[in-house]
Image (tube, rainbow, N blue to C red; front, side, top):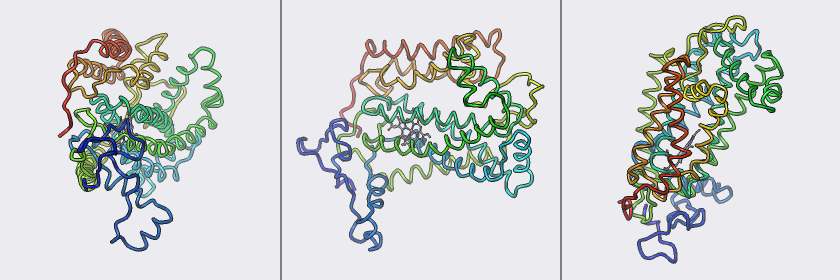
Length: 427
Ligand code: HEM
């Protein structure tokens, strides 16, 4: 397969120009098309001559050259993709049985759980699927941070990923409101109060979004929002993978692949590797659905929403907990701080200008990044505790570490971090 890889015209024998220098579509010296082999079925060749989707698929997912040294952390993109597809599919089945009115939403979800044939299974898959999705997504982002996959020329790949994360968070939040349980209602109330606290635009925006009161019209809009955001991810995932296939994958050493011998075709090598990973992912997913269905959900949401009875503590789902902890730790400036804690990720490629990608060759980044990430994980725990006493103090310290790492640490590392010699290639 690698015999197809040829150096570009001005390159010395055996060396390929970096992906940055090459026009899109000529990755690793590839011709931009991957014609069907002559032994392909005539019908396939007939179709492909008129609508070249089969050769495009072969080019992007069969012959596509991948760095040969990718570790298991590169499986997580596939996990996130599959979890997303499972969510979309199970969501359609839930939607056909759900009623988006304040009077009937809770009952319709109860009916899905108790009366609709296999409804309990589909709902369990959808709810467990969100946990699997966000767990895989956070590891996917961690991998990209550790190996510097956000750096040039992958800035737009990173940004499309961040847009995906923002859309998915919006969709997850909207979805959590739909059963109209106690946490749905009170979570929405907290979010709307937080939004309304933004000077000038906050209150009109909250009013415009939900129509004033938490009534039928609000729930209906949230239902539409949930659906639209969820399905719009498909288009953005398309852009994400398109951007990925222009530059090619980064790898654990963080140096560009330059020799054809450093690559392996996506199929069979990475299809098999992703397949094995997906089998393990499905196993964990199954354990979650069948043995621990209530483990990560809050029991309060199995109580019908009651505007007259506030729960003792309003807590979000685990994947929002770090941001919620920042919101509460920040007091009067909690909302801008929580927004900033995500915004720093959007501008990350411009905060960290070090030419070295992988943390393996960055002695200080390798230590400071885990410290920042552990602070973020700690905030996830703090999000489930009342913001008072030691929890409040430690949440504030963790918030400061997270923000300072990006805003101060990375620009300083760019200037002062000692650089280790990089390997010539990945072999
Ligand atoms: C619905 C959400 C997402 C899906 C379905 C998705 C899917 C994928 C897939 C299939 C890959 C290739 C396999 C891999 O490298 O693991 C990939 C790569 C990548 N993704 Fe995502 N992704 C998502 C969200 C994100 C987010 C939130 C970020 C970070 C902001 C991100 C950043 C990246 C980067 C930098 C790469 C290239 C990594 C490398 O080559 O080293 N992705 N993504």
